[in-house]
Length: 119
Image (cartoon, rainbow, N blue to C red):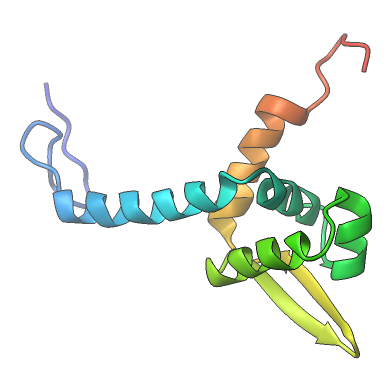
């Protein structure tokens, strides 16, 4: 027995809106491409803890200039982070709910201390 999706009225066997799936796949690829760099991944991981200025991100992650600025620029271009200026300082925070969701999954898979493990 096939169950129809109430919103679309489509059964999986009847058809899929391939154009919608293609657009979603392109968005997902853009996010995964941005997360595919260790420095950017580390920066976003740090930003899951809140907003940080550039100097704080440099100290916390060990990523030095000019690499830090370059990677923050990529995250800005991909609209994954928000920026806020306060005097001479620029503060960064995660803007993308999708990026936050992926970071949470990555934390659970790779970073969360395992019960009973000696970390």
